[in-house]
Length: 130
Image (cartoon, rainbow, N blue to C red):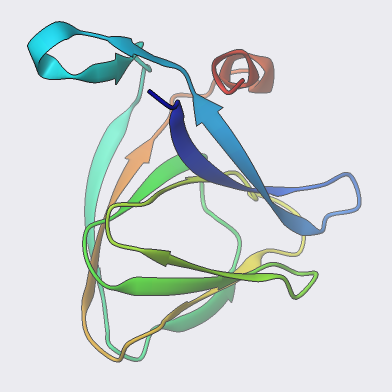
């Protein structure tokens, strides 16, 4: 079975926000299906955004964002756009730099889940994100 795909949004050395597809390795766990190794996290935050949500910003902290419903378009500072749908996972890391734009694709309340990280060295996550 394929590894678990996550889209990373990060700032490059020039402060430009970019996308990168990364893959967490998974392994067979019998009746539970395939699972990844554990990842240490800090907090879980539930979020709702208004139907008209449209914002250019940096992420406030390194975090996973799991889309629970709806669709969001994310635009990097280099004008690259991608649409993400319910069930997709983003790894947001553009804490500094020019930031990214997020907007609802459909004008309705959208629900998501933020899972924040403890302050960990960047290399630790890179080891997991093969």
